[in-house]
Image (tube, rainbow, N blue to C red; front, top):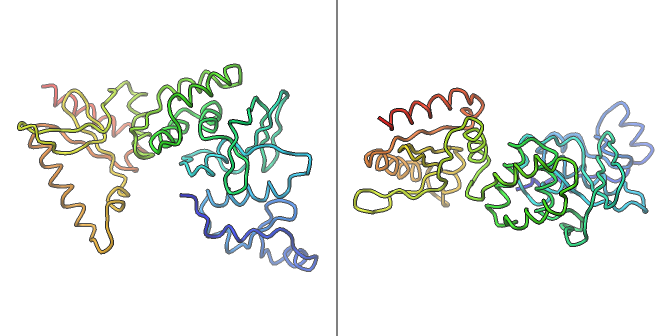
Length: 304
């Protein structure tokens, strides 16, 4: 979820005395002309919340004849989608029509085909629809980042595969569409987290799998043991442990052990039924060569 706790901190103007005092006291961060944030508030904000404030400041600073629509990563934040490793230093807008866009220090204005039906309103701000936002990101950001955003939107039901294909067809002659098609074809709503999406991309790049996603495992009596993140045909189960999954399962008054203990029982049952289980975390994704070696080793053991 986007951190909105300090969005009231946007100050649309300082008095001349405040501006003069700020030149040496640095009490406020200047986002745009006549748009400031208290320094202490700024330090407490997440990168996404900072971007949201910068977005509000950019919209406040638009001239009357300007009507671009919020797009790309800026729209993704408004849709409350994960924007892992996508730069947030500029607010992105799209203007319908031909011509070239312009890149400023804190704004990037794109120009391309944009139909009214692909524009939605959030908090009084016009932005591209979720489907259009995903395709725009897919044609302008690296494959892995695009897949993270698209998987999340599909998983949450914000878009369908048909919605994405419609946008691909609409923008077929736009820049970056070859890479967008590859990313969109790979997106899968069965990925339930950023870590699972990144894991899928890693397996794809290394030529492993593809594994089955969110597969149900059964014991010899046909009883469901559990659902797993990744199931490889060789008999290996892969589980991304983002730790937040346990927190998400906690009810008021629960102790973390109330969740972790049943999880351990579930994993023991999976191993006893004959599957090899490999777990990894965020830290493992930062050293992919080690994770891949572990998975390949497990696949080799399972094949014997």
